[in-house]
Amino acid sequence: MKFFDRVKEKEFLAKLRQKSEKQMIVVYGRRRIGKTMLLKHVFHDAKYLFVDTRSKETLLKDFSGQIFDGVFGNWEAFFKHLLSNNGIVIIDEFQNFLRVDNSVFSILQKVWDDLDSNVLLILCGSYVGMMKHIFLDYKEPLFGRSAYQINLKEFDFIETAKMLNSFGYDTDEIIDRYSVFGGIPKYLWYLKNKEDFKTQLQNLFFDELAPLREEGKNLLIGEFGSEHRGYFSILEKIGCFDKEIGEIVDKTGMERTKVMKYISELADYYGIIEKVENKLGASKRGIRYRIKDNFLNFWFKYIYSNQDKIEFNPEYAFNFAVKNINEFTGRIFEEIIKSVIPNLFKAGLIPFLPETIGKHWGKIPHSKEVYEIDIVGESKDAVLLIECKWRNKKTSRKDIDHFLNKCNYINDKRKLVKVFISKSGFENNVFSDKNFLDIIKIDIKEIEKVIFEHKLTTHQ
Image (cartoon, rainbow, N blue to C red; front, side, top):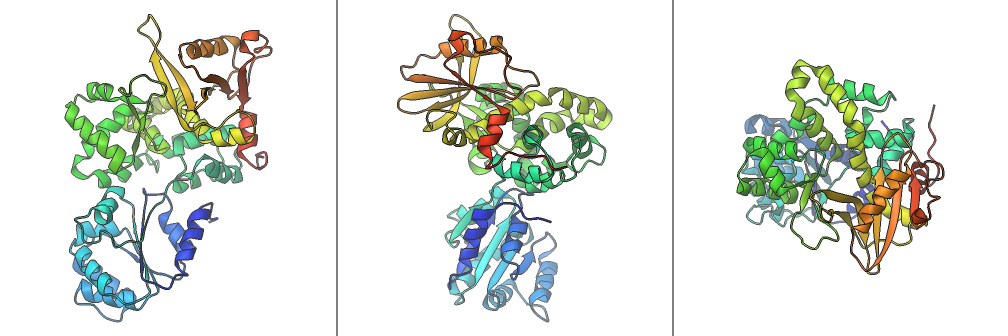
């Protein structure tokens, strides 16, 4: 299996092994992100141990047999021998010791503090909340012992595009698939054998034995524990749209204080959702929240919220997802464009690089209706206003006029730079109207050219 990307991470980890000193490194990130593959790729000669959830006696006996012809009487003797006789040690799914024997943490702390050996100890875990608790809570024994905490994240859009292009996908196809599968290496490998997008959705999510049908539960129930239903309810109601606290409270029927607790933990502790601030808004109230992870975004919208239909009428659930997939992808397309704004500036397609990026919404004057600007970028002297359209027809003059009307609602003395980005390009003579001359127009081919060093080609 070819190893994609992770250039910076590989270089950083490779430098660690060159240091002649005792080092404890923590690596964490959601499941399927490629932590184990990365560590084994860089440290192919390390002593590797995997912590499962068997009894502590069985696990100690198993671990003992991997490093010693016999059985250690206790964890302290095991760790002393392990760390004194190996230059590089990887302990994977380290957080599982919380279930097996949580005395391990104080025992390892004592052994580590007394250790006189230049060992590189890498402690890896998939449950982000648990790993943060073990190493970043000042009350815990291992707090302050790790030299580095590496939060391994998914591939960004450009990295994902390079991987999918090597499988034979063009730019439109890549955006469709990135919107659903995100930059999670494990999921991207499911796409290696190129097929029609609808077929892939059917096979991976909606068939009875689809490998990703229960994936959201597999990822998060272990992370959230006994309160998973509350967290799941919040995530389901956020779905693929940005939602304000009041809207989430109304949809879940939960008390506002409980919703606030879950929201805070999902954002600050687990890193699954993020704030969406109203740029240019007169008030900081009305903050929205969105699910950061594309895969979980899709899973909660079309799988979890349709569990009964998938169970009893999977064809209906599948057709519902297919019917609405363009709207879903359009939301993610905005995030893709937001992430490549530096590339657009570097290519000269936009006149300045904003200092901050977000979106804007507000009420239409003398109306109860709300308008939205997909992307807003601010600098001292100018404001970037971007409209993104992901649909299979060219942008019309009516579309441009609608965008201009929204821009006219913005009362800002800075220069307004208006940009319209269209997947399918623009109708002929759409910019012949003199009122449209100051709008920058960008299509998917221009996006393709600025993102990649060379134009993507589809491999047959």
